[in-house]
Image 1 (cartoon, rainbow, N blue to C red):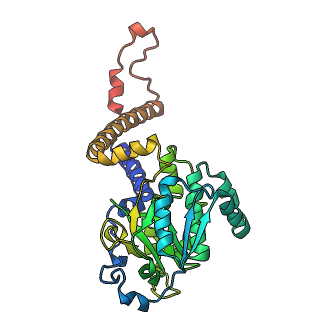
Image 2: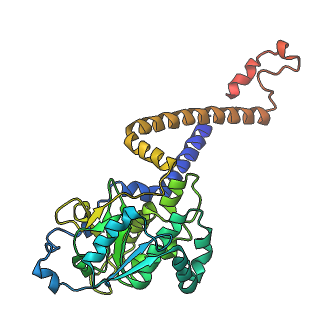
Image 3: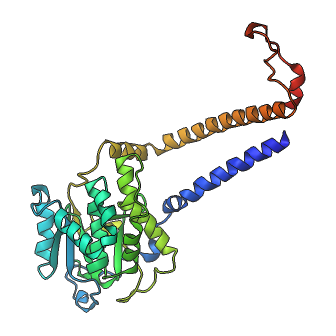
Length: 334
């Protein structure tokens, strides 16, 4: 019996180790602050400071945005116009469904099959932003993000992303030089991450969205490539939440967005608000599963012993069910 207990424990430990390894990056994201690469407040000159003029401009003055067609909804006209008014010397590229597909088919034909098979339009909208940054460089901004100040100070870095709460990074505003190694890594990873996770929200988040980008960012930091702040540097700097929005010195204003979120997204948000309850329920379910697994394992081992030694099940005596008697002798094999 001791041997069967040891085998049971080993199998369970292997299963647990496999599960932990599968989600290890997600677990480490919970404690990742990005502070080592954060753009500090002291680095960024104040709005209208003469120090801005002396900073190198590594990121091209291009602003990329995406929408179904060229008719931007009225609710997003204000944030779009904010950015255009502040950056008259920048080139603006609005990537529609048609122009996005044409670009992918022409420049990255190896990805067009994956691009066309995405079940949700938001996945294609996510993917195109990574490709245009890797290809042209520049800054990507969601339509529901307005500009609170000029982006010139941020153009001094080879690439930047912005941190989101409670953990990870977002893909609603980001920038890079052309052919930056991080965004090359991102576009090369899209196909391998393309799978259906059941819920639309989880599928989008982990195939093309912020969770996908956060996992790749975490992996990239461990790859040894996250170094170098010059024009050909591979480092990715992190814009903090305060520098992103809601402060007098922040770069962006946020408007109503998240138009693709559905009922499953609201369920995920509810889970986030009730994580303590769900954690307790998770331990309870794990305990019940462990007990059931142990019971099944002992039945399997007992049946194996009976088969090996020619014993019949203790309830079987060859007669009808109402005359069955326990075989007490078989108990020594339990």
